[in-house]
Image (cartoon, rainbow, N blue to C red; front, top):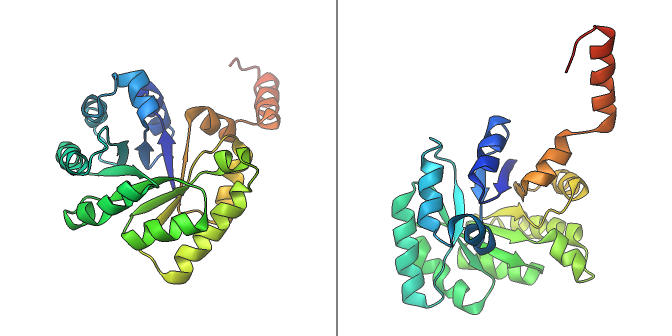
Length: 215
């Protein structure tokens, strides 16, 4: 299973990589707007300077078909492992095959049903993302959506990976791990909560105190 960090903050990304557990980075228009004035190219350049060649998922700023394809090609040329994030819309579905034919992998985001996941996989998406937290917000069961999506992908043998997204807290992460999600993407705040536990911290402090060591 692969773990991606959902962030546009280069300091967060560096810290997460320092833990030795991150396999790639995801971003979205809000993150890029907040950290890079909406410029994907600047974000990719900063990632390149880290010396990592892991996959990075970026969202197109264009919404017209020809412009989307042109921008996707430009971004792909800037980084060896760019994955283009598309949304679960009629327009974006129609672009997947074109980009795949050019060797550019696509990630379909904002998936809220198995029907949507099936169509995205059928269209040739490399990655699809059921949104656990947002599904819960609408009164659905995000974990069930994830499980059913994974079962569907495996059942049909699609060459598509399922990325659990909209991970709000460690419980979501735990459930995604238990479901066997091939990829999980989560924010740094959730990653921190995953490795911290009060009983662990209490135990460490107890050992340090007994040994006369200072933190």
